[in-house]
Image (cartoon, rainbow, N blue to C red; front, side, top):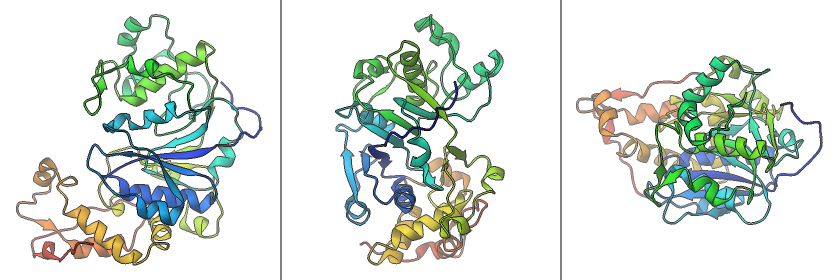
Amino acid sequence: MQESPIRMKPIDQIIVTCCLKDFWLTRICVASIRYWHPEVPIGLIKDTSGGDFSTEEMQAAWNVTLAAVPHPPRAMFSKLEAFHFPGRRRLLLLDSDIIFLGRVLDKLEAFDEDFVVNWGGKGPLNPATQRRYALGGYYNPDKLKAVLPDFEIPHFFFNSGHMVITSSLVERAMLSRWLAGAPPHEKVCDRELLVTYDQGLLNIVLVQMQREGRCSLALCDFTRWSRHPEILEAFSVGDLMSRRGHPFLIHWAEPKPFFKTGMVRSDLLGFYEDFYYSRIPQGQWKRSFRLLRRARSPKHLAPRLRAALKLNKLRIDLRQLLEQERNPGKEARVLPLTASGHHRLRVDSN
């Protein structure tokens, strides 16, 4: 499957899925979109399965709307709501752990297919590689054959955290057949078949629809990954400051800490975080307050993590963490710990 020739088809709206735990990343994501695309409509799918949270600040300062608040909440399946928005709307569906490096929409709007997914592979995959990809993050091909005997493993696979979709093409029944239970206790019918929940599901449903002629699907190389820091060396804060954009986004599709300097290329994250808070009254104070609140939250420091960090004897050095966050860099840094009592740094409520 080849990339399409140049022809423009606008994206109607960018939809970002967000939750309480990762909303600090949503702020950075939205700021990066607005930096390169000031006018594009942005909507949020708000997942409240981990607790409710306010989006009013973002809506007011960054011209963002609430696109959907699933009730009961759908947790990891929240993004699927976008597939059922009314009308044939062209949407860029994103996870929150993403930033834009340039005018990504210009690249994606060159396609007029119903769905545009990221794939940077060259040429067909041999059977062993196809199987390795499938089992590594999508589905079990043997179990899938038992359910869909005519399914052919494609020569591409895509991440469901960044994709162009057309709403109202995928019927609810096409997705619900792979799910069991009702929100908020939804789960996949067969965890051994679908390795990565919604991602495995969509890699089956959309490929099958395309082969049956029920939709069109294009491949485009528009993503760079945090797990390949050597490739990210090509991008700099200087490029962002001078608006020398690159038509890619970066996706941190991996377990993440609660602070940006624990992630590779926190310098890029920090640039957009600065941009976000530049529009917020008392922005710098709010940023520090929110970081300290995350550091003290049991949602971010689960018992297993606390044990691994030996936090029964040590504490997070909050002063050092604040200083570290003010000086982001290219490499991930460890969580600063102390036995000196800095964890008692006062955190007032807002």
